[in-house]
Image (cartoon, rainbow, N blue to C red; front, side):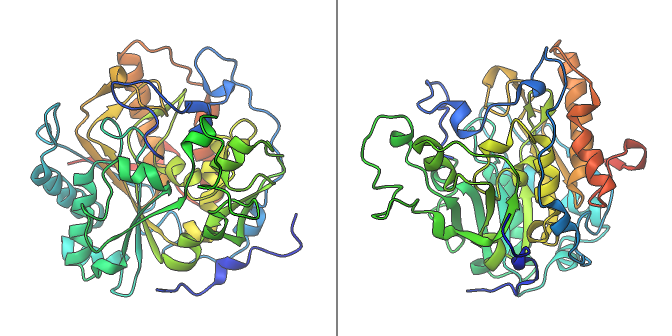
Length: 406
């Protein structure tokens, strides 16, 4: 491990996934390459035995003092669900209804109006990053209308348009899901990295889009070498892996966007499964804020969703989570699977992403049973949430979670 501590935790903040599964078409880029295949112990019909856990630098993260905004946030263990059957159908998403749902959810979570609630989380100097999930554009990705409601709230609360950033790990995925400068004028749209799909597929021998003249990934400069999640796991050394993951050592670096620009984060995942588990609030950041992740899936998998969020670059900045369950998916995830989706037409609100994920995990489990999907209820699939509670990052015990539907 590097002979220095994790430095960016105390830094001063400054102002300074192409949808590879085309809806209705065949995949050009294998799901296993881009999302990382669900480990065997996460899949149906498999004996739930996780491998021995490798060493990580989680203790360095836990040693850093916390702030008033640190997870589990201002409302530990509180989860609010807002449902409205008018929000979405096969034809359209009703932005007005979604805005109404957003207001109800924020009021129920905070007990305050939109204007006053915004001031609970932000001041006018904050640079706010909205983390979306663009995977499965047109089917199961974060809805633009939900992001619209969030942006309207921020602007009404005094956050300048120039201080709002919509982001994800992969730049092309954002565009495919509709997150473009034309759709969001004045707002920064930023991917932490690029990837050359043609090169990854072996369809192009020209690596100039992702390799510089020195043979280094062009996205290296986007990651902070002083801010990293270390895991004692050797990454593959092949070019397709490097193309997707930027680095292939034992360090997964946080994007400079998070360490040097954003002062607050709003997380908007979607409601879907990943094998017997879920791919929602904690996974949207656990695997979306760092590079070099595919090596982590088999030996760590869900624990990454806890440990990465323990680092202050996320822990002290993530103030709000809104799980987009307008159209939800109960099977086949994390890849989009049209025949396993339904209109849940619900938004879920929490400052505590672990309470939120435990609540949604149990709701998804119920849905899978209703749909006669083979269900494995072994606690291994939600142990990472209880692990977070032991670390003081959130509430995972259902008996301690305050869940309300409005």
